[in-house]
Length: 111
Image (cartoon, rainbow, N blue to C red; front, side, top):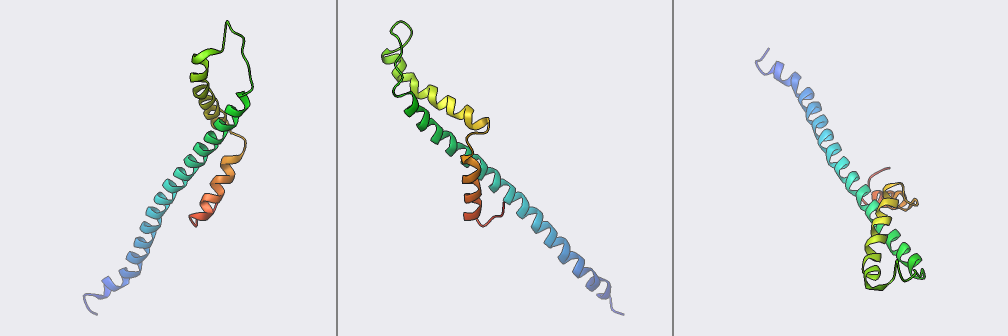
């Protein structure tokens, strides 16, 4: 019996431990990528909703003492942007989940 005999029996265990460590690292990287994709999808949905709400308020006229003028025109885009972010944060219209699913497919990740 040689001195290396006990070490050769440890080789499969070391290989298995290395494979498990690689899987854990890949899982952390994959989780980070999935979180980034989810954030991007929600941001895109908020941007889409912002454009839609701006179009929705395009025809709304306000009375003179409480609305209208340069101030309203300037802050209307800020208001619609804030509203769209809140709508997206509250669940949106379902666009983010579809976009997220397609982005995961493009990255070769499963749902």
